[in-house]
Structure formats: C-alpha cells, structure tokens
Amino acid sequence: MPQAAAEGIRRYWEAERAAREAKREATRAAAAVEIGALTHRDLLIAGAVAYWCEGAKNKPYLRHDRVVFINSEPRLIMFFLRFLEAAGIDRGRLIYRVQIHESVDVAAAEQFWLAPTGAAPDQFRRTTLKRHHPKTVRKNVGSDYRGCLRVDVRQSSGLYCQIEGWVRAALGVAETDVTTP
Image (cartoon, rainbow, N blue to C red; front, side, top):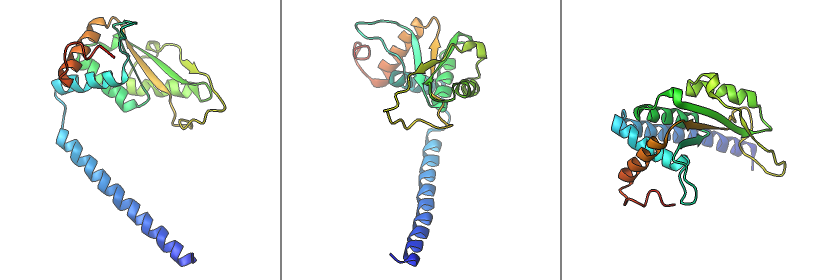
C-alpha cells in the first residue's frame, strides 16, 4: 500500500474514532439524565441487587448470615457504601481488607483504597495476598491495578435478611427462590 493511502486511512480512522466516542458519550449522558438522582427506595433496590451480584451469599450447606461485599471497582465500592448508609448502617461497623496479587505494589494499593472508602486506617485489616503463578497471563497488571476490596459489615445478620427481602421484591420471585442457589 502506498504511503499516501496508508496516511489517508490513518487520518480517517482517527477522526472516525473521535466521532464514535462522541456518540457513545452522548448516549451515556442521555442515559444518566434519564435515571436522574436516586431516591432512598431506588438506592435500596439497586444496592440490594448489586450485593446479590457481588456479595457473599448463604449456601444450603453453609450459612453465615453476614454481609460481605468484594469488588475491584472503586465507584461500585462507593455506591455500596451509599447503599449501606441508606440501610442505616454506621460506617464504624465496617471492616476493610485489600485482596491483591503479591507481585504488585501492595502498599500503594492499601493507600489507594483509603480515599474511596473514607475509612480510618485502623478499619483496614491485614491484606490478603494472592500467590503469583508465573505461567498465568494476567491482564490486571500495572500501576492502575489496586486489587479487590472486601467490605465486611459487623453484626450484619439482620441486614443480610433485609437484603434477601429487598432482592426478593426487586426480582419478583417466590419466597425460596432467592436463598436457593
């Protein structure tokens, strides 16, 4: 392919990528306006469903009845904390633990998670290190990898039952369908 043709293709796709991204951003902005600010009820519904997707759940063979939420996305962690606040949970009842691969900057990850949680350092427990397996090709590497944050709610059996009820109502399922895997 001649140099001029290759340059023309490159310029076309550069402009096309920008136009496509602008269209995607306009769609995202319109969707955000469509939802607007969440009410207390909205927050309980969305938070309970988020928990049901990402939180620890009882199994028929192993009941814990406690709230444990794990995720690597800071915005989802912050949303979960908003949900807990809406559910009447005091932030002092929360315990945090970073779970991360041992081959990265653990101290930086621990420091990173202080900001989105707004937690005191003494609310963080010892980091859980995942063993590095050199043969595994991981995509979650680099300076922006901060591991996962585990959020435990102390004395949360009542909250766990409430979440089951909120999920049951949100999903419109029968009584036992929520708690059965």
